Image (cartoon, rainbow, N blue to C red; front, side, top):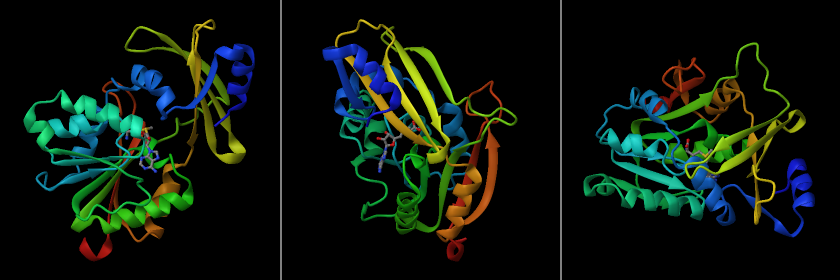
Length: 267
Ligand code: SAM
């Protein structure tokens, strides 16, 4: 997928330029450098506060490289981590292989599409993070909700973390910042909001303009307000029984919402 910014970058990189999706094979180096060490402990704890009983198996949708999954496994959960991208699944499995046998035995990794999956079993809890549910458009989100209902035990819960906007601080329309990867390499992150489509266009590329190959990774992220997601859940037949703000980092403000949904018949 091209972004307006990737076109400009690739035009000046000439033959050094490579365009790829952030979750695709060609981006694996950049993805791992930037994402693999992401700390999801505070967010995982917010989920854990709503998981009862902790002994029932948990399904995590679009688990990525395990930012939340590994903290979940530390809580002692039996976890199925579902993820679509083969590159990301490979990175997850590599990370899991380094864990002790007890942790490996409690984790099943499945490569599947969260809007169309059938695992042949049900779960006490299904969880999904904000970045993951907002990967999909409205139609595919409705398919996720239907698939989740199929995979919940009677009395089971669907838990979602959703981002809260900054009060009084609208997202800048365009910004560029530099990030340091775990290898020490510097990456540039360019984010552009496209209000008419309710998306952010994300472009990630080497901060070093002379890099060869000059790998330009792109991604589109949907900007779905949390109250709209809650309305979608209700339309999909869930009762939303709590919405609890929490801070996604230890010292930060309450920037996220933990949404707890159940199906009415089994409440
Ligand atoms: N949940 C993880 C976290 O919070 O760190 C990963 C979040 S990452 C922003 C979104 C993930 O969703 C990516 O790993 C992507 O490959 C995955 N994804 C996108 N569409 C998907 C789909 N249809 N089914 C399953 N996973 C999907």
